[in-house]
Structures are given as structure tokens and as C-alpha cells.
Length: 259
Length: 322
Image (tube, rainbow over all chains, first blue to last red; front, side, top):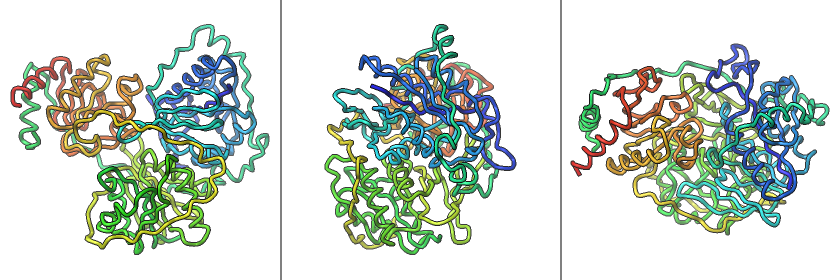
């Protein structure tokens, strides 16, 4: 069974940087790392291929520059290869344009299953996996907590407001997984060394057959009209616990009459 | 483009219309002359309630028979749009199904989606969505360029749900188009997870735990405390990522937005990711051993202390009162 995992390389969330003054979008000309949200999909894909006993995990990603250190992290975890769509014209792409590029890259690979995180940690639109599915004409199950595959059918425990649904989905299909569902492995030293030599197929938009004017800034059909500082929230009293902090908390809540 | 006709994606629970749907209706009727709901399932059961909140018509695709909402409702809305009977604006909640509907429809109509919206403002003949970024320290305002219905994914708790006193909505059928290969996922069994208290996004008090709890077993203190104050337990992303609790518990940018009367953050440092999901709370109490933790910058009462010492005493005191 071949699994493609959609992964995103993002600015380190510990140092998310700033908005570009001109474009008013997140500056991405900084060092990019593998979005931690994606490590769950990579781990799940590795486990599924492992239990299937055959097949491989391939990665698909896009960036406006040729950054690939985040991809190397996922390759070091055990993915076999990656397709990186890299083109300056991709800068400013919205979620729909992103989905179009990823779908075109996935089409070349004809996997049995496509995995993605439910949402990226930086843009967090949460729409790309289902947009990819629609573009590929495939069924999808979003917010998966557990995924098993047998006889060409994925069985997914899908998060709901009340609990979860067990959803059966014929393959090929797109499944998005929530964080925390598996424990992503740390790349071993051997894995890190091996990742340096794994194939990364770097494509530009022309190579993928996508008209550059339909994506990025030139293809955008939404515009940021303003960015303002939000009203700051004032902080109140800060006290050091001397063994009676619980009384302070109770008094505070009693005052509000919520207990 | 205009926004004279707004459709709201309707969601319902066993007890009636979902709160998010009523919230969206409250805003929609403030903006548009024609406000209608589009949904799957039994519209007759909620027509009176939706009408009471301002919807004149409920379009339903009927029973799903185990199919997922996303591809079916998106195909029906796309067909209505193609026939010139669709809305100028579609409002979906940022929910498990809302994102499926908006994402599928966006591809069918080839229009983008404006996501994570917390407010809608009028700009000439179009609507602009307001989205918080960087932990809610900045607000970005985004509008659509060009034709096609404007699709917004709106976060829960963005608008207060208020009845308008309108008559029951008229129920109308809506046809699902050809799904091709997209409709193959089918729901088998549904499981409700044990939950005794109020829902996380509707609770008056939310007690959240973070990495400062140390290990998974300690999260039990959060659940005990939440039960004692008749609140709901929540969690930071770090705790969900570690697999201590499911994604449904997560408060934050990726996760739920909560605005309770009291938010009690235990062992949560206050990463921007978390703050955006709870800074709208009326009162915030934070316990953290690091006096420099960013959570203290927005807390009304900050306790610099060890959650392993403070929480057992708090639990004991509450149990003594009960």
C-alpha cells in the first residue's frame, strides 16, 4: 500500500516572525521546519505501510522557495521519497490554490491513501485536505483519531462533538488526522543520514502543468484589506503561592458568584 | 457581489439546532434581507426554532443514510448556485462538518474560503471577514475579489445567539447532484463519549490543563476540578499532542474557542496558539510556577505556584463545600 502524506514546512512557531509590511502575510523567507502537526500523519502512514507489509510512504509539499529541511525531517522518520513543488509564483497562495498544487502533485503518484493533518499550525484554515479530495474526485474523512486499512477500505474513527463515528471509506481516499493520535518517532541517526540521499523530486509549476497566473498573488481571489492591533487585555493581580492560593481562587470565584 | 441573500449551514443535535447555527443566524439577519438555512437531515424538527432565530426558509437535502454531510451538501449548494438560486454569501461554522462543506463547495465553485472569521463587517457591497492572528494580538481583515458566492468559515462564539421571534421557517427540499467518487465514506457506528458536565464551548467555567501537569495521570485533577465547579475540562495543544486527551478537549487557535465566565488555566504557559482560544473569557485565573509565563499577562488573577500543590488543596476545599 502506498501512502502519500501532505506536509507543510512552516516558520518555527516558537519564533513565528512577523507580517510582511507590503503583502501583509506571514513572512516565509526564514528558516522553515516541518509542521509538528504533520508528524502525526507521517507516523501513521509509516505504521499503516508497516502493517500492510508492502508499499511506501511518499511526501508531497509546496514552498515558494526551495527550502527542504522540514522534508528531510520527515524523510529521516522513514518516508521513502518526496515531491517538492517549489516556485516563486506560489507566494501568496490561498488554501484553494495550495490544494490545486498538492492535488496535481498527488495525481502523478497514484497512491492508495492520502494523509494530511487537520490543519497547519501557521495558516490553520483546515480546508486543504477536503479541497484536495474534491479536486481528485475522492471521498474523504476528516478529523481522524484512528485509522486502519484492510481489503481496500479505510476504517476511521472520526472526531464528533459527542464522541466519535466509525467511518468506512473505500480507497483511494483522503484522511486527515488530529494531533496526538500516534506518537511520532524521533528520527534515528541512521535515519537522518539516510534521509540525505533519499530522492526529492523538485518541480516548478510548469513541470506540474499549472498556469502560474492561477495561483499565488496573481491567482488570488481574496485580499487583505487591513491589519490592526487587537485591543490588549489588561492583566490583574499576580500573587506568589504561600500555601493559601486555593483560598484566593475560591474568593475570586465567590465574588463572581459562579460556584 | 452583494450580500442581500445569506445562507447559513445548519447543524443540529438531538435536542435541536446547534448553537453555532443560531449564532450565525443572529449575525446574518443583521446583514441581509433574505436569511435561509441549508442543511442535511430532518428540517421539520428544527423549522420552528430556526424561524424563531430569523430564518425564513430551511433547504434540506434530507436524510444522509450514513453518508457524510460534506460532499452531499456541497453538491446541492453548487447545483442551486448554478441554477441562479443560490446565496450571495454562505456562512459555515468552524466545525467538523462545516469545514467539509465549505472546502468541497470551494472547489466546485472555484472560489476560495475565508476562514477563522470572528466578525463580519460591511465594506460597500461586500462583506469583510475579521480573523485573529499571532495569538489574537493582531486582526486581519480579508475580502473576496471577483464573482461567486462568498464562503466564510466562522468560529463558534463569535456572535451571541438571540431569537428574533420570527415564524416557523418554510421547509424546502434541495437536490443532491452527482457525487461521482466523492460520496463513498459511510458512517457505521456512532459513539458518544462519557461526558457528565456542560460542553467545553458552552460551559460557564472551563478548567484547562497544560504541560505543567507533568504527566497524563495528573490530568485527572483537571477533570475532578471541572466536575466540582460544574464546568468543562479543557487542554492546551501540548497536552493533546502528547495524547493525554483527545483533540475535542483542545482550546486554542487549532481547537475550540471558549468564552466562559471563568477560565482556570493550570500549568499552561500561554503560547499564542492557546491564548487565541481563551482570551475572550470574562475572567481568567492562571496557575503556573514560572512567574514569567505569558499567561500572566492576560490573567485577572495569577498564582505563581505549583499546580501539584495548589490543585489538591483547591479540590479538597471544594469537596468540603459540596
